Each structure stands twice: as structure tokens, then as C-alpha cells.
Image (cartoon, rainbow, N blue to C red; front, side, top):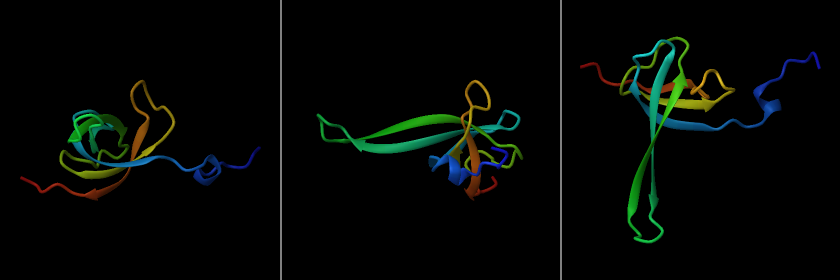
Length: 93
């Protein structure tokens, strides 16, 4: 029981790749994840966007960055994900 639990002991955590759409909050950013699926009736591809509030402890992520986020325990009312790595930095304008 005194053993420290690792992520392997808890099982595999979900990960997603998305783009940062807001970084106005302290230690939090909003990441939009877009998925495409075929509509069951009309057989056309539909784009669906879901936005997650993500914990970013170091405030490193900026708007436009491509990030990998990982599921975690509830950190606040809306935050259940954290930034694992920044995959691609947005160009500075």
C-alpha cells in the first residue's frame, strides 16, 4: 500500500492531439480537437469539434500550438486533461 502508483499500474490513459485556441487563463488553456466521421444517413463527411480545458502548469502552450493532451484526475470543475507535450509550435506573427 505504501508503494507509489505509476501510470502503468493505473492502466492506459487516453491521449488526444489538438490545437490550442485560447491561453488567456493562468495554468489553463483551451484545446480544440476535430474529428471527421461519415454521417450514417447522408454518407457525407462531417467535422465535429470538441473543446477541452487543459491544465498547463508551466504556461508554455500558446494559441495555434499543436499539443498532445492526456487524461488525468479532476483538477477543477472543468479540467480533466493536462498537456503532455507540445508537438508543434505556432509561427510567431
